[in-house]
Image 1 (cartoon, rainbow, N blue to C red):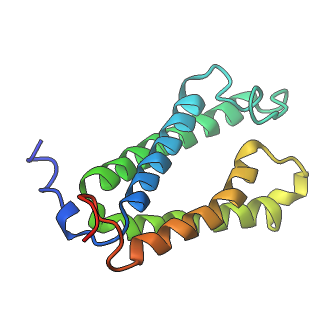
Image 2: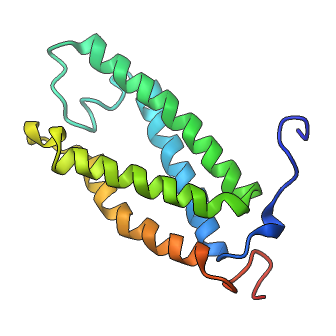
Length: 151
C-alpha cells in the first residue's frame, strides 16, 4: 500500500478532529449516492429524483451512471484524506463548500431552476453549505481538538 499512498500526514493537522470526522462522513455521503446512481436499475432517476424517464431514458440513465462513477471516486478520495491525510482536510472542505455553493446556485438560481423540479440533492446542498462552513472553521482553528486529544 505504501507504493500507492505516501505516509500519513495526520500528525501535521492542527484543526479539530470533528472536522476530519465530518469529512469522512461527507466522503461516505458521496459513495452511497454514487453506488445508487451506478447500480440501481434506474440509477435513482425515477425512484428517488422523480424524473420522467419516458423521453431519452438511455441518455438520462447514462448520465446518472456517469455521475455515480465520479461520485464514488470523489468519495473514496475524500474518505482517504479524512482518514490518512488530515493536513488536507481544510482544502477538501473548501472544495466541498465551493461545489455545494455552485450546485445550489445552479439548482435554485441558474438554469436548474427552469424546470421547477427539485430532487433531494438540491435541498441537501442548501443544508450542507452552512454545515461545511462550520466544520471548515473548526478545521482552521489553531489549537483545536486534535486527533489524539487536546493539545
